[in-house]
Image (tube, rainbow, N blue to C red; front, side):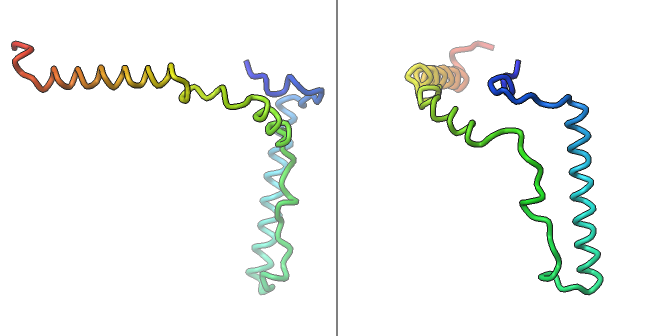
Length: 112
């Protein structure tokens, strides 16, 4: 099960409220962009029109600083493809593939 929201004291609103909020934000942005397009097509110079930018973005529920601290705590030991076990496993697979290709290429081994 996801542990995404269990380590902080902030409680997420119910799913229905989150979806309603996201819908209203999308609608608001759509209306703002339509207004910009109408002003520009109406003859206003694009430099004079207020364009919604980064300030119009909704707040993210994931904190970048929390993610950075978690990644720093995790360290480099979790990278499984860097471990010797993973490299041995890869080498073993390559050897098996080479053996299969050798038997496939040699018609004398299998008598059909």
